[in-house]
Image (cartoon, rainbow, N blue to C red; front, top):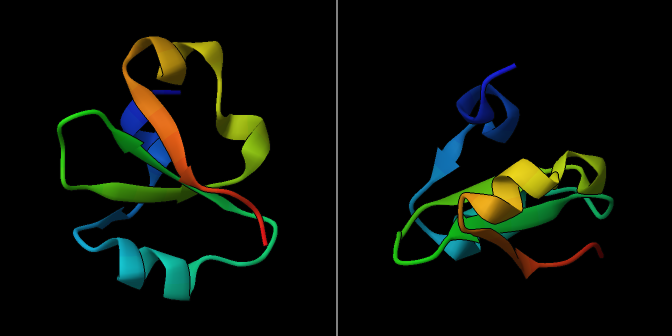
Length: 60
């Protein structure tokens, strides 16, 4: 599966992503981009990390 499909909906505001995220999801963003994605923790793979994505909001 492609990285983009894993990431799902793109949010342009961290606040909007926080509102939509469930307590069991995390929000990731790529360094230097103003885009945020809601994913489940198990989708934060080594591939995403190597592409520069990092967690900006943890579960809860």
